[in-house]
Structures are given as structure tokens and as C-alpha cells.
Image (cartoon, rainbow, N blue to C red; front, side):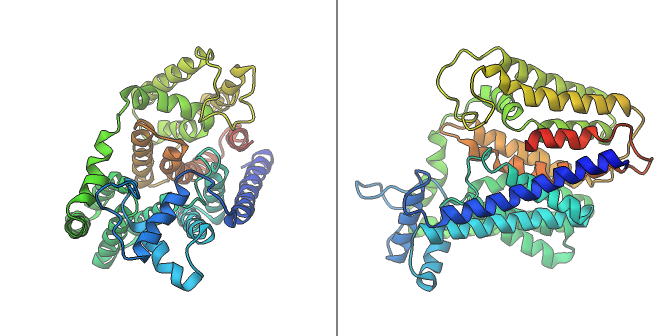
Length: 417
């Protein structure tokens, strides 16, 4: 790695660390704010208050209370902690989410450190912190999202690095706990089972049976205790939401290419070297180019777009929202053009699987009626891991230093800027 590349990479790492510190400072400022920062916060605390009072969350709807369509893990944690922390309130609820987000970031750091180095671990955690606003500023809210991501990262870490039946049991328990915090964890169970199958088919089968058994037993017990209303809310209620196929086929990718293009484009470059099937990369690239062009020709709306409104480059002229994605694409295409010889990525294929699962889960969430920016959190988690490891692969290949390696950290800086 030459001096220019190293310097730019150090600058990108410094910016990522600055985002970590900024997030922590902002979260501490928001911690004690006495009103809702997001419309569900008070409702979540109300769920916990009902548990404290011995009242059911999942009861027949009434004028007094109708629950959200979430599993009860997060409010149960609040209710359990309230007696030893001074009572229920926004401070406790946001504090749980802040700690959970720091735990998730800790796993991002540890994954990067174990797979590459501490610098790549910091880059992964810092990139996720930098995506705080892209993800709706949900990392510290009184909602289940942050606790869910912490449990998910713990489960995924255990699957990747654990060995033996104890690790299988721990991973299954963590996934079940994740399910009872937010149902979206289900997307990642078959992907982790597929990875375990490549190591030991018995562990894969045991993992699936344990995870499904714990989740099904919990659902049956809670549903019975609530006269069938639990399943009505957490499953049947969700079925009433419309699913927008146009979103998952086009608009999801369009929005990503505006708010966080690096999350797609750098993994695509790395994928071209990792998987020797050029046509697959070309199809993905063409698909995303069409989504980008779809955005380029659609600036006629006047109302602020909920995913773009906080972008500093969103103000008129609206075509400016295309500049970061175009610049990142140009930098990465130039790198590929100058480095057409094979580069053999060292990153384990497990993280590609998790990236695909994260992209799929975020796409499903984004394409469901009433979705918001927090739908992008799962992609952001695993893209942060894959991007950090891809930077290692692209800049320090075993074949020798790449040509114009500075293009990679330059693309990072465009996204972080």
C-alpha cells in the first residue's frame, strides 16, 4: 500500500471514529429528553408499564389500549429493569437502546478485528455509526430495533466463530430471543443454518430444531396465556399491511443508491473479484443502473421525500442527489479498470451470505406498507462488515499492491462526507 492510499485510508478511518464519537455524544444528549423523539416511544413505555402492573399486552383491542405488532422482548426488558433503575421513563428506555447499539458496534469491531485487524474493526463500527441518520436516527430510540440488532449480532458472531454443541445451543437461544424482540430475525436463521451445514450437518439440523423449538414453544405459551391474541397481533396483524413489489424490485435499490450508494457499490466491486461469474455482476450492475436512472428522471415532486429530506445535498437543484452515487461509481469503475488482473479476496463467504440476508431483510421491510428509514438498519449492519473486509481484500491482496489503490478510500470518504 503506497503512501497516498495509506493516508487517505487513515483519514477515512479518522472520520469513521469521529462519527462514533458524534453518535455517542448525540445519544447522551437525547437520553433525558422528556418527550417523544419518535411517535412509538411513549407507546413502548406504556407496554412496559402494563407488564409492571400485571396487565396483558396482547388483549382484545379497546379504547384504552391496542398493542403494537411487535413481540414483547423490549418492553419486558424495560419492565424488568425499572425497579432497579428508578422507574420507567424515556431515560431508561433510550438507555437500553443505546447500550444495545454499543453492543452491536462492539460485535462489528470484534468481527473486523478477528477477520482482518483492529483498524478494519473500527472502520466497520464507524461506518455503521455514520449511517445513524440514514437509518432514521433509530439507534437510541425507545423502540425494539436496537436491542434486536444487538441480539442478532451476538447470534451471528456465535454462529461464525463458535464451535461445538454449546455454541449451537447459544446461537439458537440468541435467535429465539431476537425473535421475541422483533420478528425479522427469522430471515437470518436459514442463512446461518446453511453456513453450519457446510461445517457439520448435525450442527445445522440441531440449530434449526432448537431455534424453531424455542420460538414455537414461546409463541404457544404466550398465545395461550393471551387467549389467542398474541398470534393475532404479531402475525395476522402484519398480514394486513400491503406489500409493494415495485419497491423491492426497483424503489428500494433506487433509494439506497441515493442515501448510501457505497453499501451496494463497493460490495459489488468486491463481488466481481470474489465470484468468477462476470454475467452475474453485470446483471446486478445493470439492474441498479436502471434504478438510478429511474431516480434521475423523477424530480418532479415538490414534497420532501422521507428518505432524502435530511441529506445536505437534497436542496434544489434536486439533481444534486445523484452526484455522490455517480462519483462513487466512477471511482470504483476506475479501480476495476486499472486492476483487471485477478484479486483473490480472503474474506469468508459467510459475510457475503449475511450481506445478502441483510439486503433481503431490509428490502422486505422497505417494501412493506408504513415502512420508514429504520428498514435499512439490517443492510447497514452487514454492509459495514463486508465493506471493511472488502477494503482489506482490495488494498492488500496477496498478489501485491493494486494500481491506484487510493480510489477505494476516496470512495469511502465520499460516502462518509
